[in-house]
Image (tube, rainbow, N blue to C red; front, side, top):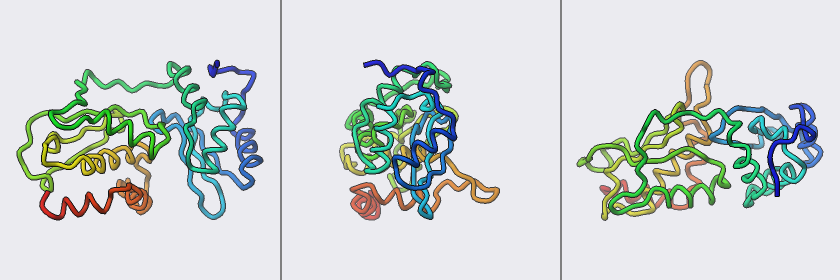
Length: 224
């Protein structure tokens, strides 16, 4: 099935907003972005669907748009057409180079790629496309004394501290760190007034949606 761009399906931002309003049955505030990390995100505030969507979906056909509407209504779904559309049109995205960063996902005890894929499917409908790697160097400090992960907006790269690649560190704890950084990739860093709000109230609320959030915090508090 072909999901490549076809200008005969072209929407303007206004017509796409009207389409979403008609099919969602409520007001929509639509922002088209060039954010290739998070292609689709939405929240409801004041009875309005606030949707952020990559601009290339103005050229998507009705099958893909129907999947987007279904996802927004139910907050779940595999989105096969949506993801196929991204794959077939990936060359049209503005890729951000990794500056020859060496990507290493397989550690001695834990596989970041496996964790990333599981979390991406369960919490982000497979829409996060940031790279992930173990950081460089050997870390000997206790878990609670280290910066355990980071997300670089320019590089679109998640780094996880190698201090976590130990037999004694539970898989669910590493997953909580990976989820935290993927959430940064999904949400970006919004401005609050003139300041960047890295861990906003919304971010903290979404962080707690991770299924092992309390379990991970308890393990960390116990000494890591």
